[in-house]
Length: 435
Image 1 (tube, helix red, strand yellow):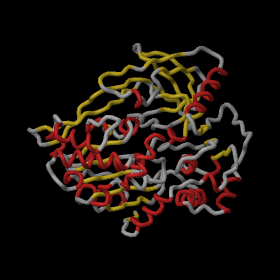
Image 2: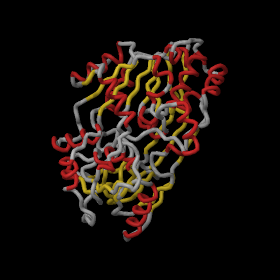
Image 3: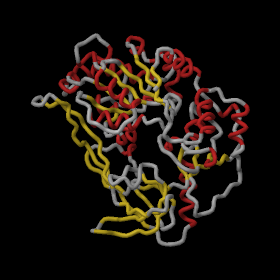
Image 4: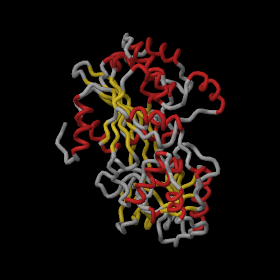
């Protein structure tokens, strides 16, 4: 591994990643540095690894591929189909020479999909060992948003699995999983807020905790136009309606920009709108990490100028820290993996690209899209129906309690944590490494 100024905690975890053969589950609260750790491991490892994610957006963020595209799975994949695909893949050397399979955002991976991966790898590697003898490294936070099981699938799913979460997969009972919990928060600095978030996450929120959160209730709070505050909503429709209303309320010319895609780039993966409409004064969020480190994915700002340079659009955005940055189109890549016989290494090739200004309207975004991002100030309007972890994800986007504005009071009913998750984590923590 290359030398980098990392904390002893990260160095120890990187040592386990690089030099042990154990199956690992690396977890931690929002802001503990899971993404930083994964990026560093991917960049510096000597192993033959692939980094996969359950969704296209997550795959783009880690410079990997989706689970479905890597294994050639269609959305209706079953164990039988996965076993069959493993017997007729055109790239057996790729899978046979893989040493470590890394999956990010594991909280969103369903149990049946993990069993399909196991079946495929056992078949292609001609091995009865779990995952065909390959090592599994999982990153994610089970207290965040859960896997999706449609209403139509629910009955069949419940008959086979105790829960939709990855740890309920049959294959998981056949491997030992080393649990590593990163414990140092880099996102929040407000100790009292951290304590409340921990209680919320663990399902141990007390009345005093709720009372403290509810000091932030402000149903009619209307931020001054110059303040860049994000509204977190439960649905895409609510966010889009609010953004459209705010955009239309601005005077001035409308500017539209169309994305360009090449090769295989899943339309569900688009990290910026295919058709982006802006006006001067629009509140926006930047959707990539800047190579010059002027901004990161999730930075909020306001459009000050829209122009062109060398026939390419350039949007000047005033950030919350008052810096003015010129934002040009960004190209995102999706990858295919293959095995190189000559070098004995797995290599990644660009399968498709998507080019657009890395900008989206951001007076409002969904709680789902906010996952993994950090904001100084948020207005939270929790929906009528709640998913496991949704309240925690919404609140933990903020860097301090003083930056939170609640549209309605929180009640114990807002704090939905799946007891299956709590039980499994309690058991695995008895043999855990907490860093």
